[in-house]
Length: 480
Image (tube, rainbow, N blue to C red; front, side):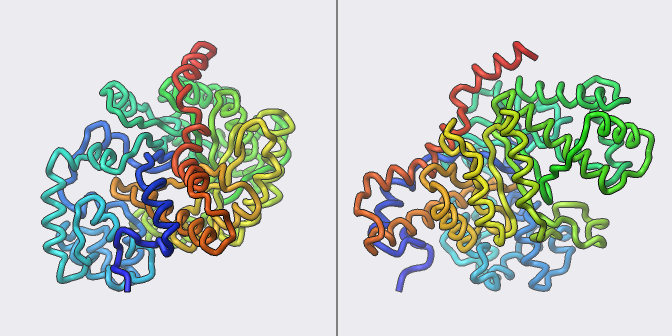
């Protein structure tokens, strides 16, 4: 019987073990999409204890605790940090076969060297040991990232953000690159007129532009997009239920915007046309600046209205949606491709029923201009676990070129989540190793090892073209 979480965890064959330990294990990490807070990196924060770095903001753990019957006061409420951790530790034994069980113990091992199984009995010891380490310089947020061999991270930033913390990080000369990503979801969400108009007030201040007309609005957003570029941004991201691809005219959108500013209610058709126009506009700007654009599609958010009112968004009340994705996504990408304004693009699905849809969609617009120009992203959110990642890898292998895949990302708010890259790499090596030993692939570990290293790191490094970032930024600033 194998020991739990030993050095060959998830590696079921000798070939898999060789591929992981000799090729994948030591590759650096490019985390090209996450929700880390740049102010905490700029300040090189030390977290006060294990609860603060591990439980605060982690809605994966929150959902598990609620399911285990833990009262909300121990999750997002006013109980002490120790009391919250104690409840989490008592929940962990009941997460067997949930990815949280693996992630929890991987993180304790990789960051803190703690091999105890976390439960109610071990909680105090684990909490005290980890919390003590977190007070040291080696366990500041920068130390945690360096410990995982992270080379670059891209945060998620609203157009109105002043990016002061990214500037501070750059000026500090720290060896890990921390770059912003342009996330304009609020700048196109007209579902709530009051919130949208309040957002425009913030946009006016950030861009120093008065917004009365649609042209004013575009000018303000374009100014912010240019500002992001001067701050080394070369990637965008959208979190949407679905892509919007309605037909529209500029005159129509100008009229819809005037209606918005006057406080009028939009019809469903007007709502979708406005969002369609903004998606095209953002995509064209991204193409002009050489961005990589990302589309996270399919989350059904804020389902529990009572708890949304009490706690706000992103607190664990979201699920997989069953939106129709194919036609609109194809129409949107085709419009950009036809106009020669289709940037490098990564699409992510949350509904696993859409796996083969997304795997084949990318092939429609890979035109040979760049290796893997259109990518299908790794298993996202509810799918970034053993089964979800395995199914994504298999579908991509069957219908595309896994060898050109840009690999894993954390999509996380936690500085302790980077072992997810290890988890992905172990699964990847195990799949290749099994097929070598089954005679389905040649026993050429040199070549297969190179492919694995490409997926782990090299493909992302080349795809995002960050080695030319300074040159492109300077050129963009000159034309702005």
